[in-house]
Amino acid sequence: MIKRSVKEQLHPRNRFRNGYDFPGLIACSPRLAQFVATNAYGDESVDYANPAAVKALNQALLKHAYGIEYWDVPPGYLCPPIPGRSDYLHHLADLPGIGDAPVPRRTPVVVLDIGMGANCIYPIIGAREYGWRFVGTEIDPVALQWAKKLVAAHPAVADLIECRLQRSPLECFNGVIKAGETFDLSMCNPPFHASAEAAAEGTRRKRRNLGDKKSATPVLNFGGQASELWCDGGELAWVRRLIAESALRPGLCRWFTTLVSKSTHLPRLFQSLQEVKALDVRTLEMTHGQKTSRILAWTFTRT
Image (cartoon, rainbow, N blue to C red; front, side, top):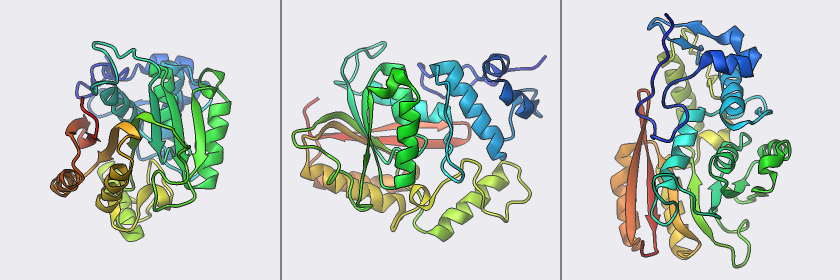
């Protein structure tokens, strides 16, 4: 009998915590069937080293779980894992002042997504899951236009998501925030690598871990443009800049948050937050398969 792989590490409200219902996904999105097979553990799965399989799985998950009839990314752009992206949103919903246990229902919650990407995944899931309103910013004009197309294709979220161009790759808030505008949350998935070379090596390592024997060619299974994968100084420099900018606008967001992939960065980030006198700092760990990441959240408001 074919088993379903349970993903117990995910947030309790995550729709994918009990594994993927591949028969239901295929019934909802028949194109996925060509990519599904039984793996060595007896589970139905797809080849995560195959970009077409990853995209087909994402399309099926979004349609089956959230009613998103159309979703796609342009060639070469980031194709994110849906369970992990939704986990970030569920953890944010548990922050003080955002929701009420057991299921957050406080409205309206307004979220700033810094660097939403062409996939627009956080705004789409957050709008469908919680009815939150989003402002998504993006420095890549192609990604921005693609995100706008995805939003416009879905009337259920079109009034909840606004996409804005950030003209400066070195700024998070200046140039995209309107006078008097405030948010309940900000969120971002910063570029991880410090150089194009490091990004390429990370891609090759990931493909080897996925069992791809032809890993000499740096083609990431989830895609990714340069601005999505690396920046000068990498993740550490990017998040420290975000912290510094948040201190200049302490009332902009109730909670400022970011993903932090590397735990060794945390001590220096905690030091930066201490220097700017953040009143509350929290680290929320997330585990997806063999990968552990975390959300760093801070506020200048009494919680």
